[in-house]
Every structure is written in structure tokens, then in C-alpha cells.
Image 1 (cartoon, rainbow, N blue to C red):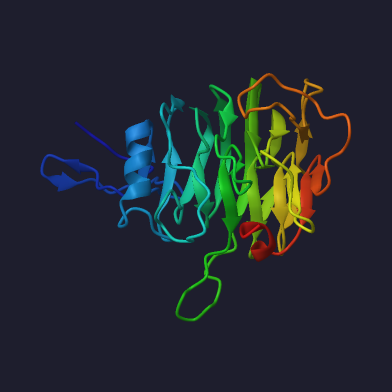
Image 2: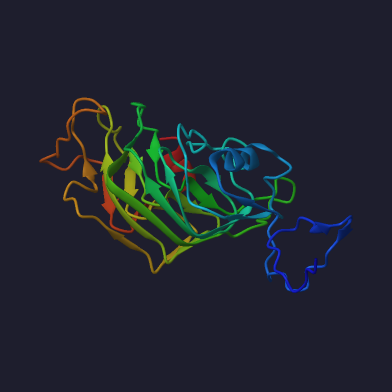
Length: 275
């Protein structure tokens, strides 16, 4: 057998007959591993040695997430609780999901499509809940010792396809809920139904933001993004008696709720996180 001039897309060795065949035509960006199923994505997220700033992974095939619970509202910015430190090349593949994909994203993700397989409806009623397709936040990773930002992540060419399903919470973003600490979101598209639901009214002075791409942002860049929907019941407050009740569109605007086709609003992290 002869093996030469082959592209090997990962950092893994290429053993043959007890030796290691040189990768003379390796891709310019080599990946630490490829991901093609739910178990592999969950393992990388949950294993500290794999979930690191210097790691880069590539999605190698379309796959579906079922019972996915890694994406959540999380105020801890590290590689735990669904946090993402690694870079992820979506490779123009589609992940179909029944839950928010990640919690806090602190590195680059590009060329990924997210399709919803069900409604993403948060069941919490305390007003601090939030939902988005890709993640709770995208932000630079700050070194706890030096207080310096080690990353300024970019989300690029992310597409969200909601179909007839909706995303609903007290705060809703099409791609992410939060963008801050030098994050960039560019060339992203979201086609989905976004609705706000909250039990009761806001305390005076408290604000809630929802946006077609990002709900809340500060020290972030959002450029060349698009939000569109075929449903008129989007970016408004659902006044149903319960979170899972029949949709009831409010007739009078609720005080403190703000909406935007791209960005819901700008505020400091603390103002919304503790509201």
C-alpha cells in the first residue's frame, strides 16, 4: 500500500504498519477532534481537558440533540455548566436541537446552522429566565489572575431555523441572549418566532430586552445580521395565563419590555443579570 499527499484534518496521528505517515498535504487548520453526535459534543463540553482555549473542533456531520440540557442561564464564565472555551467550526452542518445549545461562549464559532425540533419554552416564572438558540452569552474570556481578556470571540455565519416552533422566556435572543466583553456577531441569520412571557409585572425601573439576533449587548459588535419571520406573533409579550397556554397577544404595551429586530437593547451586565 502507498499513502501520500493526503489531508488529515485532525491533530491525531496517522499510523500505518507500525509507523506514522507524514501529513504532507494537511489542512491549514488542523482540528483536535471532529464531532458527529450528541455524546461527543456532551463529552467535550463536560471534560475539562478537552474544553480549553487552545482546542479547535469541527462538526463533521448533521446530527440531532434530544433531551439536551447543557445550555442554561449561567453567571459562571469558565468551561463548566455548558460553557465553551474551545473554537468550533460548524463546517456548514446542521445541529437540530430541543434545547439551547450552550451557556456561555468564550471563543469563536462559525459556519453552523441550528434547527429547532420543538418549542424552546422556559418554565421558570421568576423573570430571570432567558432563552436563545445558540447560547446564553458570547463574551471574551477574562483571566481571573490578570483580569485581562484572553479572547474576543466572534460568532460568524450562524443560522437559526425555527420553523413553526417558538422560543419563549422573560428575555429572548435569536442567536444569543447576551453579547459583551469585546464579542463580535457577524453575518448571522435567524428565522424564528420569539415571544416574551413573564408571570406578573416588572418592578419599577427594571427593564427586559429581547432581540432577533441578540437580546442585550454592551462592548460588542453586531454587523451584517438578519432577522426575519413568517409569523406575525413574534417579538411581543405573550399574555397567556400560563407559560404553556394558548398565545395571547397583548393589546397595551407592558412597561419595561423592549424589543428590536436585531438588538433588544444595551445595558450593563449587572443591571439585567440581577434584575
